[in-house]
Length: 113
Length: 113
Image (cartoon, rainbow over all chains, first blue to last red; front, top):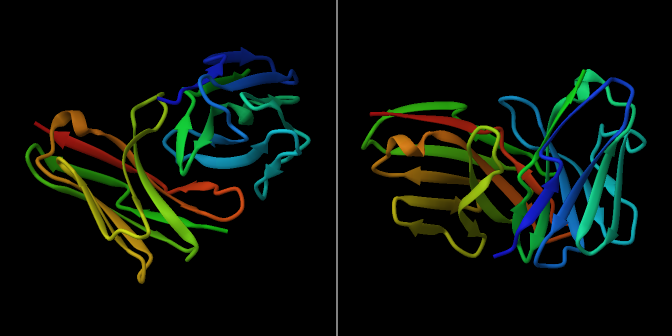
C-alpha cells in the first residue's frame, strides 16, 4: 500500500534556529500534500496545503513566512520552521492524497529549547 | 471553511460494552468521512470511512452511520476490548478545491477490563 515517510522523527533545537522536516511519498506520486500540527492532547490542525510546483496555501492564522513549505517534486514536500521558538514545539504530521483517502507520515516531534 | 465537532471528549466503558462517538460537520459539500485511531506519539490509523452516497457501513465490530440531512455521522464500536483504548478522530473532506481533510476534536476512549 501507499507509504509516507517523514524525516527526522524527532528533533531538538535551540530557540532562534530553523528546522527542516521532510515528507516523502515512497511508492506513489503525490501532487498534493498536507501539513498538520498537533499539540499534546489536542487534535490535528491543518497548517497548509502543499502543491507540487506551486505555492502552498496556508490556513488562517498560520504564518507563511515562519512555516516555509516547498513541494519541488511529486514525492517530496518540506516544511521549514524558521526562527523556532518554544511555542513551536509540537508534533508535525504530513499527509498525502491517494484518491479520496489520505496516507499519513509517522510524524516529527519538534522540541525547541 | 469546514468545521467538525466531536463528542464526547472522553468515554469510559467496560470491556464488552458498546461505544458511540458522534460528529457534526458544517460544510454541505463534504462527501468523505473517515475515522482514525491514534495511539500516543503515532500517526493516525484509518479504521473505517464512509462516503456521502452511503448511509451506513460496517466492518466487523466497527460501524459508521451518516445522516447527510442533519450533517452528522457516528462511530459505533461493539464488544469493546482493552486494545480499543486510544484517541479516535472523525474527519470530513469535500470533493472541491484541495479536498482538505478537517479533523474533529478527538475522543479519548478507555476500555476497562
